[in-house]
Image (cartoon, rainbow, N blue to C red; front, side, top):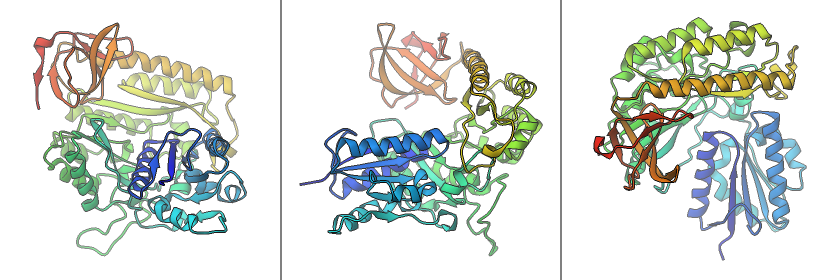
Amino acid sequence: MARKAAFHSLGCKVNSYETDAMRQSLLAAGYEEVPFAPGADLYVINTCTVTNVADRKSRQMLHRAKEMNPDAVVVAAGCYVQDAEDSLRADPAVDIIVGNHEKGMLPEILDAYFSDLMQSKGIAVSRISNVREYDELHFVPDGEHTRAFLKIQDGCNQFCSYCMIPYVRGRVRSRRSNEILREAEKLVERGYREIVLTGIHISSYGLDFEYPGTNRQTPYASAAETNFRLLDIIREISEIDGIERIRLGSLEPGIITEEFVREIAKIHKVCPSFHLSMQSGCDGTLLRMRRKYSTVDFAEKCALLRKYYEMPAIMTDIIAGFPGETEEEFSETLRFVSEIRFSRTHIFKYSVRKGTAAAKMAGQVPEKVKQARSAKLIELDKKERVVYAESFLGKKVSVLFEERAVVSGKKAFKGYTREYVPFIFYTGRDLANEIIELVPDSVTSRGELVARNETCTQSVN
């Protein structure tokens, strides 16, 4: 009888991708997937350690799994494992510990564990800082959606003062182009039309490879400006028939040079939607964060994107209440965010993470202050989303539709424009995975474009 396996993923999109890859490998090995609920024989929790809260959630999920079935095997995998291996070795709720570099070996690790009559704790954790090879994980979704994530890279060399990622994910390691293209082709076979390139730090893709005509390698590359390796893989993916859209994951501002933007603008399949990590709109705060740019630099990058694209979506992340952030510094951030006119901003309250330089900094901001600052940024973001969406009213846009919905009691289909603006189309037709050009006639308070007139549609399939 097949063992029943349940899965739970915490944290980022990369973790979700890797959880799906582990799931697919276990199903191929004969396991049966069941819900993350009582009754499973095996629980696989892909953990996160980006904040102390993430650590706590990881521990809670591991203990919850053992409580649901004390006789089940509980697997702790991922980032929290890399940071808390010693405590997990002593945790009776955890049976197997799997590091980030070992996720692709999960079926073999389980085979070895189940063949051991002693049932001793299984440990498979590399010293991630010494790992130089990309851990080849393969995942091709089942075709139930229209957009697929494609991991091209792992690791980070930036060492920002608030972040544990370089310590638990290791240095930059890039996936070979033939493996990326093979997975992209399989995604097309499954019917996917939009590919999202993802990784821990995709701006550094390929900087660990040997460069043509030299014997030079840059395994510790800290900068990623005009990265031809990333441009090359984007070009190669764009040549695959069936891929209609290529969307880029989060980029470092440094990669946005005149040459990079000029070249990427020539690839029509690349969506005019760019997520540039900013974190703060105050130079003093950026310096304490160990970010490698100033607000002037960042504004110039946004101007470059707007030079080559008519109405590009520019998204970002902001951390509210970073250590030492004064009211004046926060006001600078609020003003800068307003001036840049982001299409979407993701706001996070600073969370202390033990082991980082920021955790030891003076001037830790009280929780109530962080909450108030976060609320102001969220309110600004709500307004800016609507303003950006309104700029498309009366203009024809291309929408990739994803799912049915009932909105205000009426049948509709939801999708996204190339700029990643959510779109609601009132229709009874089945538009799943279709790309339609249409003209929006209104915008919701959440920044969603709306179309009600079916006669103004044009299929671009």
